[in-house]
Image (cartoon, rainbow, N blue to C red; front, side, top):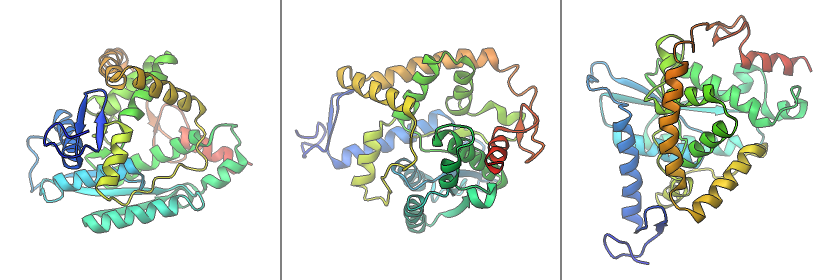
Length: 321
């Protein structure tokens, strides 16, 4: 098929829109959606100035999503004196996996001339994911431990870097999967938190606790389109699944969504459109109570609703084995 806009050979057909696009017009389409999301979420305040620039920390894993996000933000704001971009990578301690993705992250940040910070579970928490998987004191999937640890380090280091925003590479598929999981589980509080954290436009908790506001500029772009963009732009992305990945429930949701999208193009976009409205209503319901009882973790000082935060409880259980 030929490109709808210029007649050149198409590299992509978006069934949800019916568009056939060539290399150049496809990449321009992705870039337009990301920049529109940045504008609509109000990431750059109207009063931002070179005298007091915004610091945006980008969670850079070296995978396709975070690499594309970092590339697009650098292309858009790399020379903007109102914004300072800092890439933050986390080494979980997974032999032969994260080392290669960190190589990709270093290659990208060197090419873009971006500041790049690397932290590790081993140095910061005293644990390595390979060892966590072997011990598994809580009888949980590896992703459950890793998700808690990664979120904590992203937030704590973004705070340490005095970040105004923390940006992550979650794509449309990621967000639609999370939306369905929250809905199927009937978890209204999690819907509310999801809205405030990523759809809000920002995480409201930042006003009362030690949370850096988060944003997800790729959330309008399907996963396959992110991967295609990384390939066409020849970006140094490490596209390999984590050897410990075992989120069985999310995998079921993923397969369900892929099937629905194939039979009914546009399903993911429709889910997110309705979910945002429902999640905003849930956020209004729970905002008054959320964060009211937050205190400091006895062990690490981070914000928590109990004496010990979830991250420190998991670390303690691992250390006890």
